[in-house]
Image 1 (tube, rainbow, N blue to C red):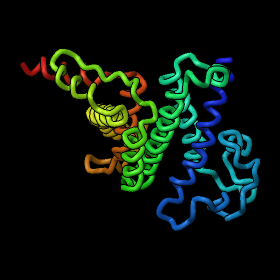
Image 2 (image 1 turned 30 degrees about the vertical axis):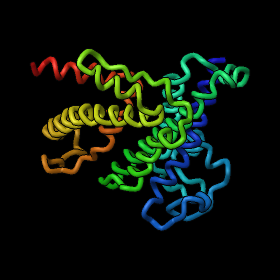
Image 3 (image 1 turned 60 degrees about the horizontal axis):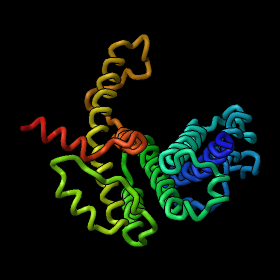
Length: 268
């Protein structure tokens, strides 16, 4: 039953990822998000069996059935990542629960399910931010506003977000005392602010390491000929590193209090 649950959640994520591709590719083009899917090369409308996440790309060998133009690898990549992230959020929030457990004991999960949906929405927006930045080297303000709004949803609705572990170590007793008296929703928002802060720190180091590796690769042109135009001034999208850092902090449950306490102790 576990495998059925994970496959189902992955499939849901892949379906959402398919729509995220639409958002990424059509944002700023004037093409409505609700318009039917079509090939960007020949403009032929896509049939339903050409839009099955991941499988259609593989079945068609990455080409349009009508004009044989290559389909961008972004499509299956975003769909796969969305599926993986949906499963990751499920495991993080639901533990070993299966879909059958949820159906049979819906009352036991009534406080968790709203949080799960919000988190799925948040990771979806973050995936859009990262992919859009890779394509255009810019973080679109609209996506950031949506992320902030989603992180603040619990503060406005109080949809059972009160079980987050916001405990902090020694020097953060006052911080914890304040959090204990905040609304559950606002505490949820503060948690994401903390996670976002940690992800920025982590993303800085990830980005720095990747940048150094890319510049190193440029020196070995025979192995990395595609990087011959790379310089220290080359634009490298920052959002993917930031989002990756966010996922690492969230999925690995890195504690904000522990990290901050390390910095305080080391500075004494």
